[in-house]
Image 1 (tube, helix red, strand yellow):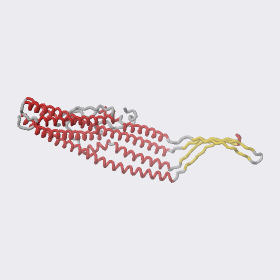
Image 2: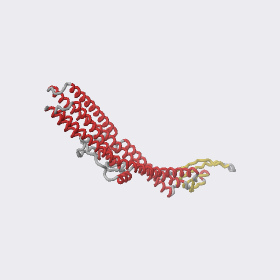
Image 3: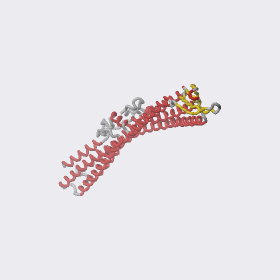
Image 4: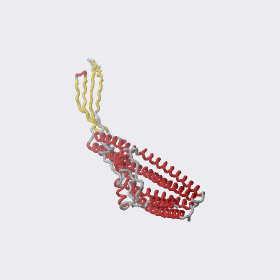
Length: 424
């Protein structure tokens, strides 16, 4: 009976320990500094940083202007047929450069600024999306790891259960058929524990494959999920104030609008100013002068401007529609996070009830009033309840972490143009 009593106490302690209602405070998320470094080193962000650097150089070129000096040279012969006839060698040089008018220079600078801002927003969006991917992979690993720990505890309990059954058989208090049931339960627990360990390792490998520099570890005890801070309206405004996808859409509209203004300036006359020198009549005549050329715009420039204006209008409408969609999604995410906490609370209550039923069944078996089959059944139901409560807990924690990420309250995700190149 001592072994049976020991098993019953172990069962009760294990189910109480696995209950998720204890107010434990655990660090279950990556370290903020390590997460920030991992995000900046991710392939997606690295590509966005390269695009940002390239666009910054293009913007500098646009500010400087594309007009360049042009050198023309010519050599010819002048044949004089009237008497006295003669043939004279002549040559000439010309140096010219197109002139960028002030209004066009201002339009180019505006376009350069819009392109830089768009590249910066794209970098921020890549950083934010990498943060979402990191959270998803992290919670996939955390879920698999937590299940592996739970199955390991159940495997240990099954071993204790088998030892107790063998002790009762030796005392003549249980039939040998119970040994078969206990061994089958142990084999099943061992298989489940091995499969859970494999899933945890695979999830860890996927996480490290995407973020190789991240330290993958966390406390074994997960904290109880908390309701989101504030109200839905406050959260929605916080998300829209930091949403890089919306920033990128707006900056894209600004780029197209700036391009339309630049094309409008291009519809004016393009002047070209230069100097030329000509050596004529075999060196007997020297000509030095100024040249002025005008490029007259045609219909193509007008249609290009109209196309850019149409694209700009379409992009502005798309940005407005995107804001409306993001506003609805943010509110839905907040409501989902609240519902996830409520789901966990209900699942936790159910798990506690099933745990109590398993404890009573174990106590009855200890007193010789119950059968092993009933103990194993109640343990299986309690385990299913614990797995469901654990999954609900992780879903609630993940939803809350996603809210903080989108509101920029979890990790630093803002991008500054001056530090985008030098960031680790």
